[in-house]
Each structure stands twice: as C-alpha cells, then as structure tokens.
Length: 211
Image (cartoon, rainbow, N blue to C red):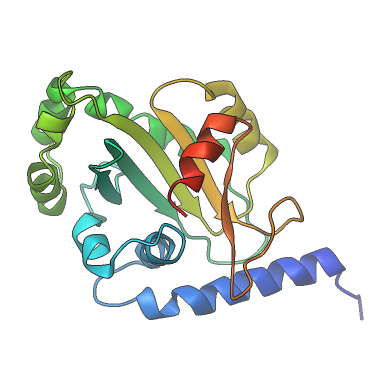
C-alpha cells in the first residue's frame, strides 16, 4: 500500500480542521462559501455576528460580491468574495481573482454604484448598497478607500501569486486570504490561521489592522 507523503497528510489535516471550524456557520440558506466567509469575518477579522449577517449578500445576481463591510473609522470599504473547495489538493488560481477584480468599476465612484444598481443585482445587494450609503461614501468629499478581498480554503498556485504581484500597488487593492498550510505562515494556536498572500507590504499592513 502506498504511503502518503507528510505534506499531503498535513494538507488533508488542515482541510479537515477548517471544515470542522466552518460547519457551525453552515446554517439557513448559506452556501459552503458563505459559511467560510462568515467564519473568516468573525474569527480572523473579529467582526460582530450581527454585522456579518448584515454584510452578506451572496446568491444569484450578487455580481460576484458575497459581502460588503464598511469601516467608518478607517474610511474603508471592503468588497469580499469567498471560494470554498470541496476537497483537499485543489488550488486557487488567477482566474477567479481576475473575474472578481472585474467588478472594480462599480466601486470607482458614485456613478459606478448607479451602474451596479442598474445592472439587476439581487435584492440583498441592493438593500446593502443603500443601507451602507455607498454612493455617498464614494464621493470625493468622503474619500473612502476600497479593497477587494478573496477568501479561500485552497492553497494558492503560482498563477495566483504572479497575478497578485502584477497588480500590486494598483487601486483598488486586491488580497487573497488563504489557509496557512505552509511554513511561511504560522498556524493559529487554537485552529486554522489565515493570512493574506501578497508581496506588497502595504497589503500586509492593511490586513494586520483587522487582527
């Protein structure tokens, strides 16, 4: 019988541990991806559960936007998307990152928000946009920064890293948060540890402010 390598066993253990962690968040009409995102926002970004519930807009017609969070103290808008992989060993490439970043024009200013609302988004997203007053926050007077954040339970591949390097320093910023399965990122003491994958120091600095 072939013996599995230590790295493959470790990757499977990491995958199984995270599945256990997100299981309590798989409730109601949430998908696995939404459950992962809810777990991430509560345990990594330390958001309040009520804030998380209000932030999620995942579903048909969400335009690739699974949640939106506004930090009024930092004057920052975070657009989030989650990708949950069904099995260990599947990696996260650059395709999803490119598609996700393709919605950036919607958040380039007040006119972009109008275009988003005219594009037929789902009811949850429409309500969220109005409740957060995004059209107002994206005026020059308010001067809110926008960051795009993808969360996945899959390790990134070379194409994802290359793409992040290619767009590093561009606005809006793009981050890929992935499970810490390599020695590059220390594991959490009580469970999976998530960290942003990027070579840009400004991204790491922005991300650390949420911890």
